[in-house]
Each structure stands twice: as C-alpha cells, then as structure tokens.
Length: 441
Ligand SMILES: Cc1ncc(COP(=O)(O)O)c(C=O)c1O
Image 1 (cartoon, rainbow, N blue to C red):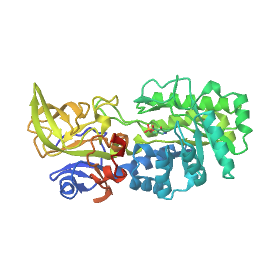
Image 2: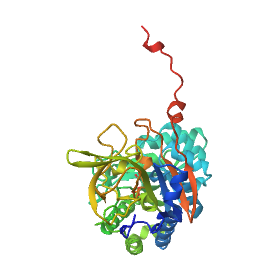
Image 3: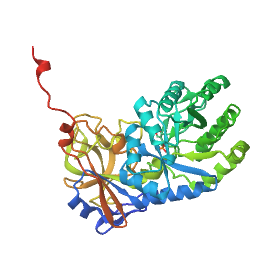
Image 4: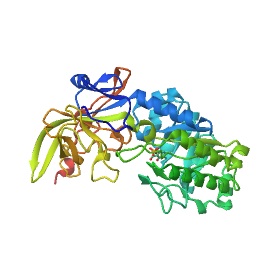
C-alpha cells in the first residue's frame, strides 16, 4: 500500500514488497485461503496493549477486567484471561463465553442496565465475583434469587454521577441516564434497606461515565469525581471496591493523539493518594477497558466489486459493509475510521471516493470523501483500520441476510480462523419450517 501510516496505527501492520504484513502474515497470501470480507486481528498488538496498560497501572493497584462487548471472540478472551485479565460481562451470552473458556468466577463482574431473572440466576449460580446493580429493583431481585439458591451475592451499586465528562465519544453517565442509580438517591435509608437484605452483600460501586476519552485531563477529572462519590458513599457503607468502568480512547483521526499511559498512571496515583479511605479500607480498584485493548488490533478487509460514477461522485462499491462494520458509516455519530487501499500505492495521484457496501440502504457507506489512489479498481483490497473494537460486535449482522465475515487472529506469522463465515444456513437454522395455517382464511 506504500503509504505513510499514521504513527498511532499498530506497529504490527507493516508495509513490505509483498504488500501489507499483519503480525507476520502476508495479507495477500491469506486472502487466497480466506476470502474477504473478513476481520483480521493482531494477537501481538492486543497482548502488548494489555501488558503495557497492566504494567502502567500496577503501582496504583488498579486491576483490569476486559470489557467483553468490545470484541467477544473466544480466542481473544482466552488470550486475555491467559495474560491475567478479568472479564466484565453484560449479558447472558457474554457470561456463557466466559464460562466456556473456564475463567475463574472470581474474575468476572456483571454490568448492564437490564439484567433478567435468568441472567442473574446464571451469574449467581456461576459464583460471579460481583454484580453491579443498576436499580433498587435489581438489588431486590438479586436477593430473592440468591436466597432461592442458598447463596449470598456480592454486589456494587452502579452510580450515575451528577457531572458529565466534557469531551468523549459517548456518554453513559451524568445528568439523566438510563444507567445506574442517581447519586443523590443513594441515602442512608436506602443503604440500610439494602443491608437488611440477607442474601446480598453490598460491597462497592461502579461508575462508567463515558467511552472514547482521549483527553488525559478529562479521564483524570472523571476518576477523581468517582473517588469523591466513593468517599461520600463510604460514610454510608464500607467501600471495598471501586470499579472505574471503561473509557480509555484511541485515536481514529490523524489530528488525534494517543494517550500517554505512563503519564496517566502517575496522575492517577496522585489522585488516589488524595483519598485516604482507599488505603484504610484496602479498597480494590478496577478498570474495565474494551476499546483501548483491542481497538487498534483489527482491520476490516473488503474487496472492491466495482467502481462507478453518479453525478459527480465516484463510488467504490465493496463486498462488505454496514452489516459488518457499522461504526465507520458516516451516518453514525462515531466518526470515520482510517481507510486505505491495500493493493495500490497510496502515495501516487489520489482521488476522493465514497465507499459503498452491498446493502439496500443509503446508510451503508464505509466512508465519504476518502482519499484513495485514483486508479482504485475492481479486485483491490480495502482496509478499514482500528476495527478491533465495536466492529462486528456492534453491527446489524442480520440485515439483508448476507454471510457473516470471517474473523482471523494472527500472531508471529501464524493465523487461526477464530470465527468462520456463516452462509445462508445461519439464517434458516433457528427458524422451524413454517406452516401457512396462520394465513389461511
Ligand atoms: C459497563 C461497561 N464497562 C466497560 C465498557 C468499555 O468501555 P470502553 O470500550 O470505552 O473502554 C463499556 C462499554 O460500553 C461498558 O458498558
């Protein structure tokens, strides 16, 4: 592709004479075996980012619980658990994935604004470390289920803070929210009520205010605000853990800068030192990053089907699209991912193209006004970078019933087909043959 990749693009993506090499695997060769569209993830990138973050946060005593929703591929979960990560799950499906890889239940937490009876029962049976409850109704439900199972379940309160993060990719806390319990509603009376429930142990709190925070100051302010909330609540019940949620951002645009994790870690230590109750209580501290760990590891690879003009705009039409990689669509609020032609030198004469996918909807665009080589043509490979987090996991995979993308995990020159593409059998599998009776007169 011969382009100057921005410095923050993963070091595991190298340009060579044979084209792009991803963590030691030549992409062109791989496409002879596994057909695009597919996601390719670098295991080395994930490992390095996890370990660098873990190392940086060690001296502040913060432990990592990877947020499964960012990318729930079993082989990635397995790898991260092998490296020592805990897991934050937010649905029965994510819990099942955690169970499948035989993670120690004491390293799994459960978040999510609606947790059904059966989800809670599965989590409690599993022996999950903690459930971060998001309403008083949920707490009573947990108590009733735990009682039925003859257990006592550790819980925390997911608190909706008053303050909002100023600059972030998306807000989940502050002001009015569907998430958590408003801070001011957690009174001594409510806490006493929770304490009187015999089958729950109120132990900590969870605050997740925003995702994709790229400004160190915002991250630190938010962390300090959570510590203040914890200090206030510590007057009502002993805070044995604080879960700071996720939120560490990654750059998507060339004018954005990567977070300096070592510097951030020093700042975190300074903030924590301002709250002596943390040391006095021996409070455990957790962070649940998703995007930061897996975001940069992935590329969504599609092939150009054809190129066509329509009234002044040239469209590069590709064989994948929104149903696999919704995030990058210009109709979404998340922002454009970096996109390159992986088959042609991106340094020569460039031209602006709109990149359209195969769905019958105008929101199915991978990008608008994307600079690609002027001679981009049928058969070229196009790569959407930074596709490791919230890629397939956040996309409307069933829309138009296309086959799903393959997902390939590569590391040090080897690859594994982590999830194969499913064709039409997927669409019919869980639908029993329907009789026409309901339509008869
Ligand atoms: C409860 C919870 N924790 C952690 C995360 C991960 O956030 P991020 O990918 O911004 O680190 C999310 C994402 O939505 C979440 O809902």
